Image (cartoon, rainbow, N blue to C red):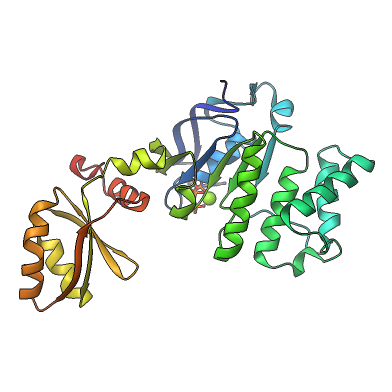
Length: 312
Ligand SMILES: Nc1ncnc2c1ncn2[C@@H]1O[C@H](COP(=O)(O)OP(=O)(O)OP(=O)(O)O)[C@@H](O)[C@H]1O
Ligand SMILES: [Mg+2]
């Protein structure tokens, strides 16, 4: 099966900053690819290269088989893009915004009217047609942005942190919409700071410093740390952190909600030593047990590279 999104060796610098530094990507129809990484990793620049808003210094990208450098218009016609800081027209209504984006995409007349009705129902904004965009809640704005990105029925959807700053319930709604778009056969790349969203993707790529450090299905990525993450619930925190970090086989101590995750070289030693060491230091240990690694554990380990042993 041919990929709908293909990027080979993409490079883009801004002055001395290598924003994208040799990215290869391939995303098939019906596949959701999660792009994660810290601020400034190059996620937005990658997406802007794929939508043809930026020209790469080096490398190629194809959308639906069309080379972005040589066949920009047919390539772009297949892409829906929701920018990280996209702008709706605040003084236009919901319907006017959607109609405008449809016209930009060359739609009009009865076909556009039908498409806007369909999309407003799809994103749950039926009944809000006459509301000015500036009066929408954050989540509703994002849903309208998604509707605008989908107006021309793109086969490729690029979403740049579409749920940033959106409440958890709306994030859930939004994700249901993405699943429906995928079911219709689109290829989707979604950048996200949320690991629970990344975990929903078929594949996840972790970017840092303009490079994709690892990519794979979430389960494969977490498998690499199997047996090397311990959950520790204990008090007081400062003492716990200090004692745990001092164990020779503990590589890292990270706060996970009201607990800690310890990344260990091997579980046995710390499991045997830590309860005693913590108690001796005056801490109260509620729980220490091996847990299934999460994507966040993997990415923290990666960010602490290049120490080979810290890498999954
Ligand atoms: N137009 C630009 N001019 C100059 N530098 C830029 C420009 N766009 C991006 N950069 C730089 O390129 C690097 C990558 O930025 P990019 O926006 O792609 O990162 P990101 O992963 O999307 O980050 P965030 O999570 O904060 O959105 C950063 O160092 C950024 O400052
Ligand atoms: Mg960004």
